[in-house]
Image (cartoon, rainbow, N blue to C red; front, top):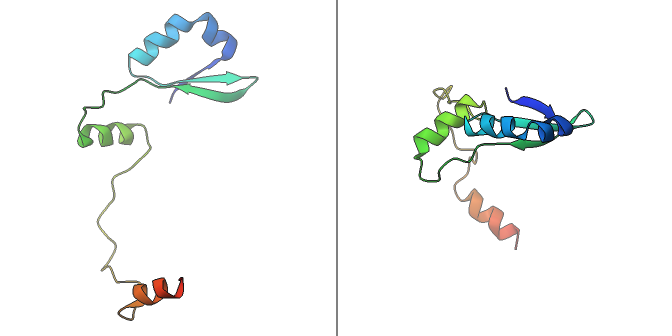
Length: 90
């Protein structure tokens, strides 16, 4: 959960805010009680996909999918449905 600072407080404690961001934390800035900005640490672009997915999981942005609940079936029952649909759009 990111820590929230008012705009006035963030200005007065800017060094503290930057230290938190450098440590990998997210900081939210509010103005008159409404959240208006979020300061996030920059991550190197060279990180591999597994590292990025792990970070997104930790932040609660994504979650790992379980196994499919059953057998996957095609949505279109008749062969050529996509072709007919695309032709009807012309």
